[in-house]
Structure formats: structure tokens, C-alpha cells
Length: 154
Image (cartoon, rainbow, N blue to C red):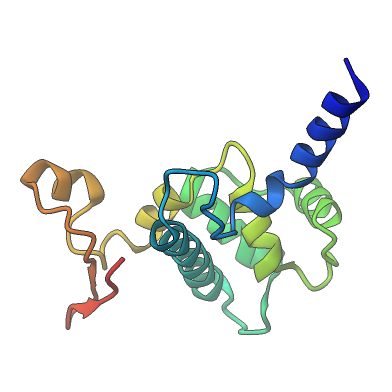
């Protein structure tokens, strides 16, 4: 491998994390609006999940709050050791809990699915699941949430 190729690979690896949230479309076929929309959806859904489970409204998901999220989305019970390791791995203090940024990092990781978790949590408030809307041909990107149908257009 040449030094130039090695340098390019290193630079590429350094930018992987940032590529999820940037709107630079100069080298892709994706429009800036699409990327901004994706980033906004990601942030909005993650914030909604965090706020929903942050029962004491301190800005962190403590063990009990994160356990509720885990149980709701996967049916699994969160182990205390797993919680400690998660907090440590994300740079959070276990006595405080998982911050919003920590939850964003968790959902940006491979093996997680923000959209599925969001639908599991708020499915009864979102009129029609994604699958139902697509089956009806009604996937216009407009979600009506709550009894009054609050519009959170994508």
C-alpha cells in the first residue's frame, strides 16, 4: 500500500462519524434538503425518545429510565453491568445516566434502528405505521401525531 493510499484511508476513517450529520452534498447524488431532513429526523426522534423516558426531567436517562427504554424497544431487561459499561463507553457518569448526546451515539451505532424503536414507543400516537401507510400508498412523509393530529411533516 502506498503512503498516499494509506493517508487517504486514514482521512476517510476519521470522517465516517461526521458524515452522518453533515449536509455537504458536493460529492454525492443526495440533495442538501434530503441530508438536512435525515439529520433533523434523527435528532427529533432521538430527542423525543430521550424526553419520553426521562421521567425526572434531569436531562439524563438513569438506570431505571434506560431500563424502561430497553424493555419497551427490545423486550430485554437491562443488566446493571451492561448499564455501567454503556455509560463508561459513552463517557457518561453512571450516577447521572445517559445524556441526549449519548443516546444519539447509541442510535448512530451499527445494529440499532431508531425508526423501529420510535414506532414501538410512539406507534399508538402516529396515525398508521410506516408499513400500513406504504401499503395504502399514503406515505407522503407527513405524520399526524396525537389526538389533534399535530403535523410533524418530514
